[in-house]
Amino acid sequence: NINLVWFRNDLRVGDNPALFYAAEQGAVIGIYLEPVEQREAHDDAPCKIGFIYDSVNELRKKLNKLNIPLHSFKVKDYQQSVEKIVQLVEQYNTDGVYFNNEYPFNERNRDDELEKVLLGKGKEVKRFDGDVIIPPNSVSTGKGEPYKVFTPYKKSWIEFHKTQGISPLPIPSKQDFKIEKQHDYDFGHDYRKDLWPAGELAAQDRLKEFLPKAGYYKEHRDIPAVKGTSMLSPYLTVGAISAKQCIESLLEWYEGDQEAFYLDTWLSEIIWREFYRQIIIDNPQISYHLPFKKDAKEVWNGQHELFEKWCQAETGFPLIDAAMRQLIQTGWMHNRLRMNVAMFLNKLCLIDWREGEAFFMRHLIDGDFASNNGGWQWCSSTGADGAPYFRIMSPITQSQRFDPQGKFIRKLVPELASLNNKDIHFPTSQQRKELGYPEPIIDYKEARKAALALLS
Ligand code: FAD
Image 1 (cartoon, rainbow, N blue to C red):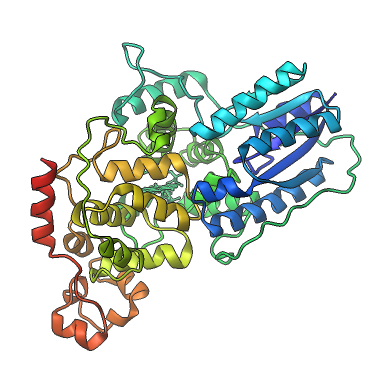
Image 2 (image 1 turned 180 degrees about the vertical axis):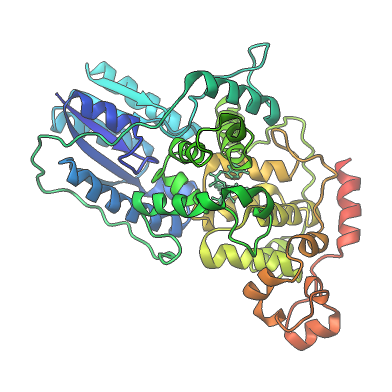
């Protein structure tokens, strides 16, 4: 027996169901396809593409140790991806293809199309759910309907997880297979390799580094100046680590104490990730850029210039500008800041949340359709279990609360570093002039009033 394993957002050998079960059947040929035009259409950031390329190379090294080759090719889009896989199945005369599901709409359509064509040719198609801990559609409301609210979803998720006892799969055993020359399509890009070393080992190291801090997560996770979160999101996005592996280690950290484990805040965040995946499956309109709430008020008539200033980190609000600089300089932004900049753009500048969503995707190394869309719709109150419309974070109060000594601001906006702990959150006009820092682009109180009048 011989099978193709098509790697996509699962660039790892551990806990990879498609790889594991294909290897159980016999020889495996690994394939990676880079869909160049599709990436543009999906606004994928160059840093994310570069990170994927390096992750593919790291995966190849790991696979080769198991005597499994990994060929990578360029394709135009998902239509060509289907054609290429069919061609490779025929070229290598494999029994079929194994892959792990991706849940956004275009990806599901692509996979359904591939399945149809290959089944028509008498080939096998085996699909797995390697990107999530519990398979989609495992839980539903008492009425058998999909969940729209996080807390009851989480409750059912935990009940399901308890009964299933789902643990990660091991690395497959070494194959009897001689590796011929491998195709390598170089789609590398520059990114902050110092911050985001690629590959499965780097991801495991990062998890190990985080776990001793897990006990402080609840307390530290909202403070951007503290490295209190795992910074595993880019690795989860490309699948260099699985969510199952993450929480298995968390349970070990709790020495198997299930009660404490299920109450853990970090686990809860990973469940948010699963919730947003379920949401995009149940609500395909989201993939057409429509709001989750069909009757959501969309009143975004802000001036384009405000959007430009936000993109350039020149809003004149230190916390917002520091956050946007973090995104542009590193490809990542702290979660508390993602919420702040999103609400600032959408509710205070009245710019369509989709503009912000696309800008994020064009710059994030962890850009993930489900989580990014979920985050933006949560902030704009158009989403599943979103913030109430009147929840508008004040960029000044949030700055005083979560960066009280301005440590984060001082690092990212060094021109303000000389200000005292009070002024750094909102400098006076005189200070702005002296330090070359812009005037605020909006009047916070007026903007808030205007937003509430439009949204109520
Ligand atoms: P940790 O706090 O260590 O959390 C562990 C993991 O849980 C994360 O790596 C992530 O996979 C998941 N997670 C944590 N918070 C959330 C959340 N609110 N929603 C979904 N999953 C979560 N996350 C992305 O991975 N990609 C995105 O494109 C993305 N865009 C966002 C846009 C907005 C407007 C907002 C408000 C949030 C967005 N998030 C996104 C969620 C969250 O901000 C990041 O996952 C988190 O900041 C990543 O840092 P971390 O790995 O240190 O997270």
